[in-house]
Image (cartoon, rainbow, N blue to C red):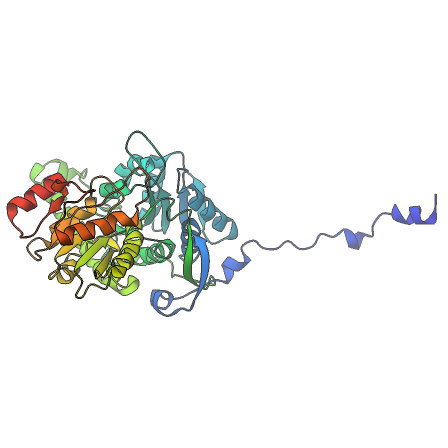
Length: 440
């Protein structure tokens, strides 16, 4: 055996066999410092990145000091919660696990929120409807949490494509509901949602909705604060209802003995509590204005011949329609509704008081936004309201459909895309409004 071979096979010295120290996977998370919501939302410098909506939600959670995230897969939100799981591995989320199904997830979120921790779940389409019983109970229990709803088809025949009809199921359960147009909205609305949800005079869940795939799987520019800062932790004992511990029940519910013995008391307590829940929804307005810059945004509305009112992905299509109309010499304004609950009723009344035509494009069949708009401005505007165009079941919305409704509405030409029963025209009177509300 040669000298070289002997040296090659000589055992390593003990010092060389000592393993290098392991890197702490939570090191970066431990360096995060807490800043005030005012600094986070209004003052902190931001840098721009080109990311998907799912990644935007992940980055919002990274900066939101979340205690508990529970995942259950359903397209198109599965990727989002998978990325939140990565945050758990990095130490940015304290607890994370996969639930057995949506009912169990929403029940566990209720338990987590009731015990005083900051919670985040996500679901979509049929998952939203399956978990809706639990979700609808959150406001009455005064449970702050932020839930993401990546809207998709719920009707048969089943599909996984974008369709925001499920928003109509969320509007009247007492939670605050935001509708994100793009990746930037997903980031901003999620972070602001935690702060607003936990305010003492609010103490309600927040639903952040987006049109699935159009937002979750597409990329857009998102301006984000440094990942080294995060929101303050939840101060649970500042909530409207004491958290569940050894001395405090979660809330006084209708199963309490005094209530069971009197139907009148049961009805009265429930009625009063419903009123308080909706009053809390209204009280959130000032915080939405403070941290999100308003319940809506308005562009080119003053002096416009027509105004398009849209939310979610329809706002992006409407913005392009406004540009095309401008090239044709038609001045059209755009109102983007960001908060659906509370709804910007006063703002719309002021913005639409002199408008001749309102077009409301939507990504659903039933026209829930058109109904909200008509209800809000009835008696405050003489505008002709076109409840459409609408696409659903995953179809994209050609911008030309919106432009056609603007031109048809202004010239009096019969619409080729919207049924007459979905148009409330000209002079406002009760018969037309009643017919319109029944038909759309």
